[in-house]
Image 1 (cartoon, rainbow, N blue to C red):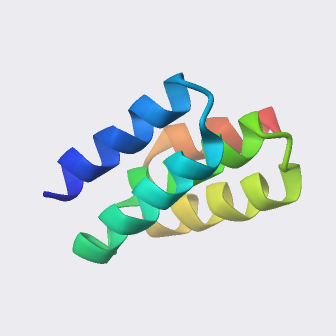
Image 2: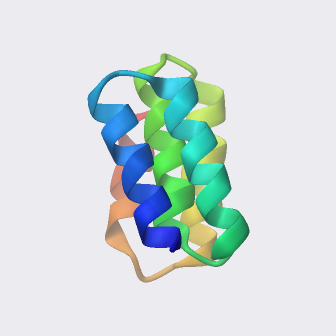
Length: 79
């Protein structure tokens, strides 16, 4: 269920609907609070919306949740 909801967040990102994307990722995290990719998705939404401080916070949180995941660390480098 979290994957399906999170995928709606990805669709919203593709449509440049950043607030809607964040809401979908939040809803998915209620189902799977430990999914780092959902936190990363929030970071991408903030980054694309030009909200760099928020993006950094989300990417740092995702990296802490999944320290071996290079994607979160790579996303931090974008900020």
